[in-house]
Length: 154
Image (tube, rainbow, N blue to C red):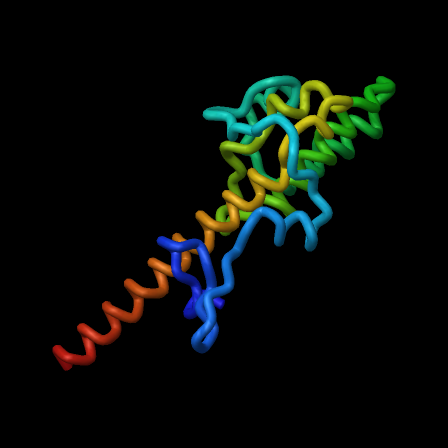
């Protein structure tokens, strides 16, 4: 797919056809809503989830351990368990990364769980996918250029 991706037009080129990659494609595939409030990635980890993970390296494994510790504790903090679980889902399903360390994830959005349906998740996931495809496309192109350059030198 990366070989067919054209980052400037945000479309795939297959043989002689141009196939645009739009928010509607995400909506159909993932069932995400289209018309809502925009979501911004946080500059730093903040909000309730940020305070729960304060002074820890934020990895998926650490967040899962935090969920287990909250569940095993005597407090009935169901909201925090839900916030952490949704946080893990965001990191693993919608905004995956190569790095084990999680940063710039939508922590403050999770403060009010009841309002999560008010956000345009389709747009933010689409934007994330387009950026990831474009970054991978350029990385793949640079690798090919480096390999062809080294073959010329050899």
